[in-house]
Image 1 (spheres, rainbow, N blue to C red):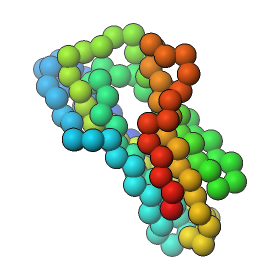
Image 2 (cartoon, rainbow, N blue to C red):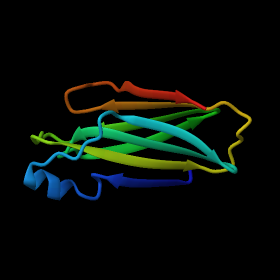
Image 3 (cartoon, rainbow, N blue to C red):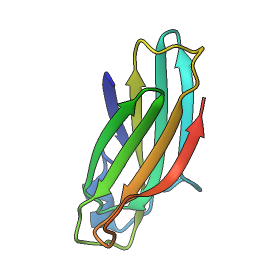
Image 4 (tube, rainbow, N blue to C red):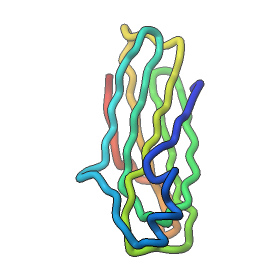
Length: 119
């Protein structure tokens, strides 16, 4: 992986939790696209607006697994849409890639697959 951009509520979390507002999209999203030699993974998750997210990505052969861990011990009365844009350069559009998104919070011991797609 060469680049990760975070958007959505990563930029507004403090404002939203203070106001108790909600900034959500109707469902979580995962989109995989190619642009020249770059595989782009766009991820959007509706999570608690007080989330404290730690992410990591593992690439093994043609499988990409993103781990999203909410380490917050607090839960606010609002949801927010967090976005990630992962870019992987020097990939081939001739190869099939599997992307698996796994999530856990403080109430769970193990990650659960929440989104999966293939390109």
